[in-house]
Length: 187
Image (cartoon, rainbow, N blue to C red; front, side, top):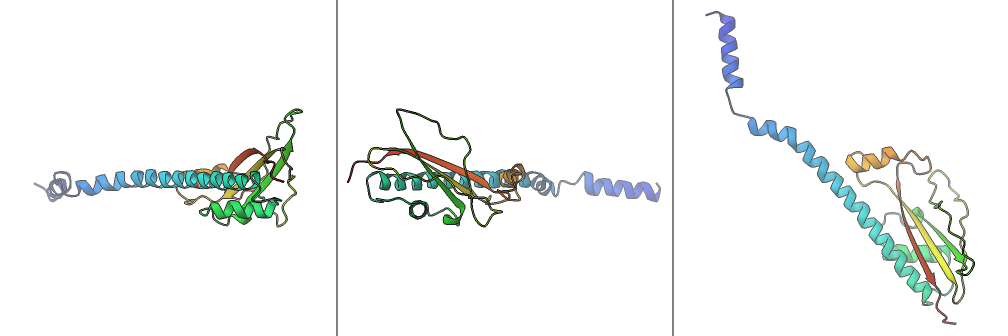
């Protein structure tokens, strides 16, 4: 028996026949997949949670306007009310754009499909329509809030950042909430 075959047999016996380390190999192969699924689930949960809180903030603010608790709604006081209720939204006041428009139900014109969001590249944001209504008028409030992915380098967060090539977004995503209401006759 040559030295070379002796070494081969020894290596084969040491590595191929040995069952030590089987669990480690399986762990190294499977663990990254489980972590990826976990992180994508976490990101998806954060998107859902932020959207639910944005919807709740808009609902509460609209209720306050509708019943007269906020008698003269402005962009700033509505934005502040929404942010007070939706406490989980990061940098809420600076990442939210509001649009409020009046519509006549007897002479209907649809809302534009274009929703205005914050342009992160601009220091001064473009003017978005914001008109107050009076008693018994139909109003639509549309809110767009920008968010950075919670985990922008992994899974769903990376997919969101990569898919959003809009330069105004800078890798963020937008959540939109719309509410229609009639101001109650309280005056």
